Image (cartoon, rainbow, N blue to C red; front, side, top):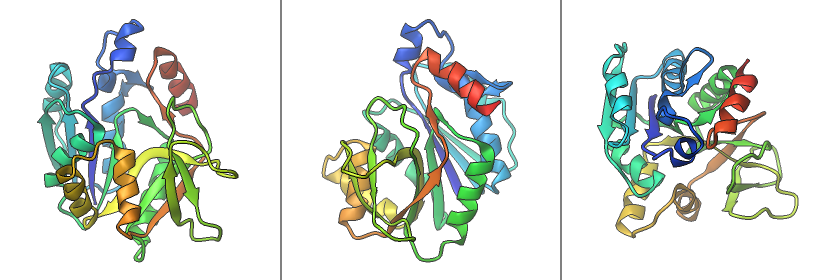
Length: 233
């Protein structure tokens, strides 16, 4: 499986709150945030790792250049208007039948992520497996409607919660290669934002399922760094 990381954000909130390091290089439990993700991907059997970084943070690309991985490491340095556009830039490297994409500030326990990857690898029927959690700390969460039953099929992605809905998107996207055709279509239509792309997946008729994580943390503010460290320890 190919893995990819979106690390092209400005990290402006962290810098305004006194964090001098680029977000991907913030230390979490002894290593930069981005290296932690790469190591987890390799432990999950990654066939390649592809990353998009922000040209305003050349330290990130310089750091990645020091790494020696047992698989292909593809790095793009480019500013994009949205995470969906960053995803599109990375898509040319996602040639395997299945791939997994995350944002660099998506913090999860490695053991949960490994179970998620195994579940996605063994799933022969669905077109995608999206991480969801009931832990909500995002400023603008994307609520995930799940159909009643045991198959965890997603029926909608909403900006506001529907009655009885308590799961939100965790920022981890496992998809089959066919989902890239829909990404290309969204780009041609001028669609922005990952949440609108996810809605397009459902509108096209793809079978997208949810995989629950106990907890996923987004590092958006300086206080989130301490929260993430405590969570991982």
